[in-house]
Amino acid sequence: MSITLELDLPDKLAAEAKANGLFESASLSGLLEDELRRRRAGQELVAALSEIRRQPGPAPTEDEIQDEIAAVRKSRRRAPTRKRIRAHGSLAASRLASDLPSDERRTRLR
Image (cartoon, rainbow, N blue to C red):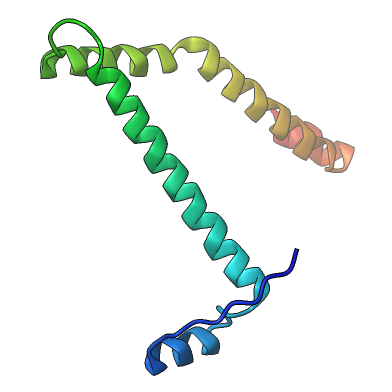
C-alpha cells in the first residue's frame, strides 16, 4: 500500500529531518512502527493496571512486593542456569582448541 503524506512542519525541523534522512520511506516506517509499539505497550499497561485495581482485597504492601521480586530473582539464579553457561563455555573452548594444530592443542588444553 502506498500513502502520500503532506506535513506542515517548522522550517528548521523539516530541514534537520531531511538532512538526517527521516523523510525516507524506511525511516518513516521505522518511526511509525516504534510509535505504534509504544502506544500498544501503553494500552497494555493501562489494561493491566485496571485489572490489578479490580482485584478484591487490600493492595499488597511495599514489603510484600519486594519479597515477590526477591523470590523471582532467586528462582532465576538457580544452579541449572549456571551449569548451562559453563557447558556452553566449555563447548566454545573445545571448539576453539580444535582449530589449533594438534601439538598446540595438547599444550593449551592442559
